[in-house]
Length: 206
Ligand code: FES
Image 1 (tube, rainbow, N blue to C red):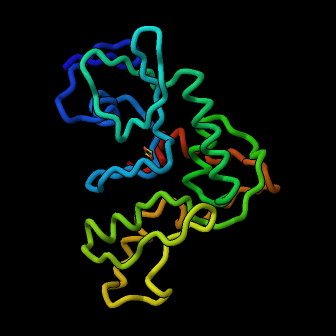
Image 2: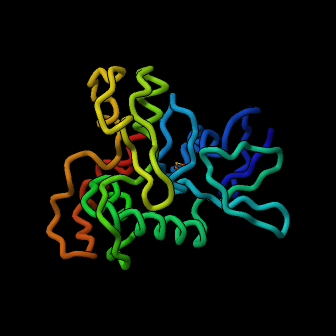
């Protein structure tokens, strides 16, 4: 089918998502909760793009939105970039030292975080849960509670027998890695990552 991405008409296969199509043609869309080989979860919304049909447009998560004939996708409109900056800012409010988030924030031109959040070092992206369940066949962790109490947990807060301590959950976590070392006041982003970004423009690891 024919799809237009950022003004370029391209061919997409039935069953592809907008993200699949964009990446196939080398168009960068940042992601956090998406990984090849794991089921889509659409938790972070960082992959947001604008889809236009005639005069109407809507914002969708590209990782779970299937392509349709004649779809017009805009991956970097001001509306899209503003939404991504807001998402990153909100995530950084509760996970300020994540190097992945710091790098993505720098790449999106963020220099400050205006919000204060309770630090919890988890963005609830669900990658660890899906990795354990779908790739390691462990099923040792899951989400517990709802709303602001929601968190990844083990049953009864004890390591279950199903856990082989393989470390795959830590390996795939976008915020469990080495914390950002930049000199920062609370709420400031040092943007030191920008030098690294020139070497690796896609730090999300996908
Ligand atoms: S990557 Fe699409 S919602 Fe997270």
